[in-house]
Image (tube, rainbow, N blue to C red; front, side, top):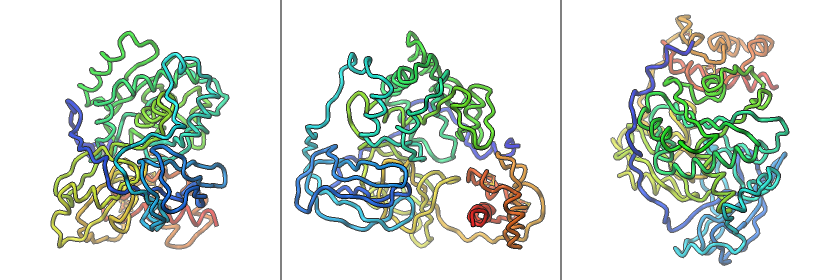
Length: 431
Ligand code: SF4
Ligand code: SF4
């Protein structure tokens, strides 16, 4: 089904970390008071207050859980300021002026290896919760909730696949932070009383796979596995199937089969929370696309304004052409209105494309979108049902199985934005 789309992934073998520019000393950082999962917040500081690095300065509230807000610098609280969040909404951000001292809050208590080795899963769950750890591959799902499973776990899958085109931030992390990756994997094995933790990497990255085969020698419980080079190999269903042979059905959790899975950047974040007692305050991102002068990877402080990163890239290429800015990969990312947006800890990449007009043609019923869909949906039929507002048919076609991989739009012969229709179908099916 997905073989037709394999050519969208550039065949390359990274032979070392993609160059990464340090941009970890911005004058101001901006920390969101709301996000898609937690729409409200309490702010514990008042204008003029001094804050420390990692100090808890607020608490976001959601319907199911709360999220502590930590300062990513030491400095002075200036006030609230509106900027775009990665979800595309104008949001109040806590603005902190950096004093460039990075004074660590006294509440931060790093642990020795011996102390880490004695931690139970329940203690780790609490530490991860207090450090506001979420899925850093873009999901933003609270990690502590995954830790709360009582299901016995036989194997843990680490997603280092990074399957979308144009992105290499995880590649940089895997090359530059192998000890944090390995220690994070060992901590996961300890937490879940598990004997196998498998790092999955695209087969074409032969040098990286070889590097980890050597690195994991004499480290019991750690393995590396090459998986298919096609998109959407990074979708958890595909990665789990490639690594274990288990085919999940829609709605099933991996834990049903004794499996847990984490993104590789999350593994590093978990290690930093457990060992160093640090929330995520610096992350690796990719800035790429034909609309940017110098595409590159960055090590960036959480809370940095995107426009500063764009300037570091030399600005926009071909200024006369309108730009499409996507947070996330080109296939699954979401467009934002402009670059007055903040890099939060779940932003993996920024794609800037020259937004040339595309003329849609009528559907020629070629079936290409159906052949491409990794979840077995019939996108063209969903589109037709949306056009005729046939709610019963929309429900029957089950659009909520869609993982928004974008392959139907990518493969459409007539350049129709098929995914837009599937998204509308999802909304209609819930009315
Ligand atoms: S975006 Fe949804 S409908 Fe389209 S190919 Fe991907 S899973 Fe299927
Ligand atoms: S790929 Fe495009 S043209 Fe072909 S059936 Fe699907 S919607 Fe129609």
